[in-house]
Image 1 (spheres, rainbow, N blue to C red):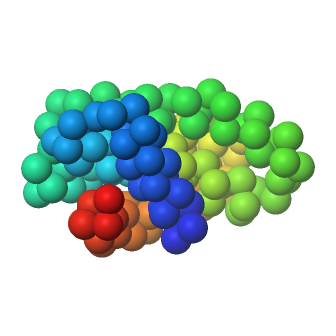
Image 2: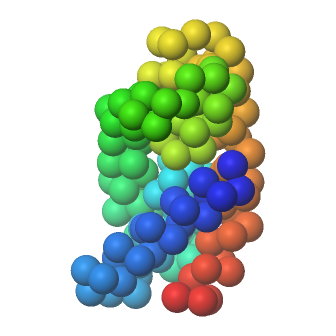
Length: 133
């Protein structure tokens, strides 16, 4: 979950930097990998735009729900705990709802727990990474 949280932050920040986004927009993208209420709080405290942040959160969640199961299958990850951790960390509530289709352990328990813990991790890491970027 820690590694997944870091990857979520760094991919957003690097992608925004490479596309030449303004600083306030970079701050809006940083917390895209957590659930919406947490991302909005992080974005507001970082000086970003919460409406833009909500859009990026939805994009991350929907794309994770759409492509996550396929990517996990492609990587031959079959264990329900590993699948739930990956989906919950990367695509938060929308991904957790999708993972629930696969079973209660994967979606109901593990994915929801990963979503919650990654939200705590990201809320600590985003300010650090914003200083570095």
